[in-house]
Image (cartoon, helix red, strand yellow):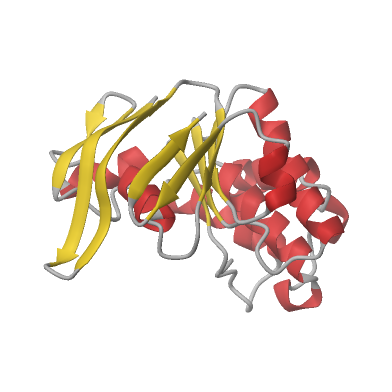
Length: 218
């Protein structure tokens, strides 16, 4: 599903984010990315979503070479990706249901179909009862769960989550992780970056980055 082949990313002569990184993630795997701030985790996830391109090497996502993909094809690549970031970027002028519906409406779904699938996505993260609430009325953990619902409403093949439990209390972090594990359990490939030692200790596979290099691939 995802393959990095000797990938490096250099922003300038003095700023190298990744150095000669190679690993594979099989379809349906749940993999955690670990490492200190500045290790290259966010850059790595951005490459998978074609937000960044490699300076050297190959990033292969579902058979497509990210370095060769044309700009017009990037939206089609991302339709198969669910992207979850620390900053939820929920639109505060509309309900959480409307926020979750938005990716479907952008891709041409009818309003009825978008609402049906958005309600199903909110139900999966335990927030259907809050569908009409405004984002600012929710806790940080609830807002992050809304971002997960929005990320999976297109039924992606891959979920990329960049520090999805950062700044959350333990109970909220566990709810977010449980939601991600639920999608993994039905075959969605998940790649999650985290500083959370408790989360990493329970992980089946962890890829460690340090100073942009692969430290350990378990």
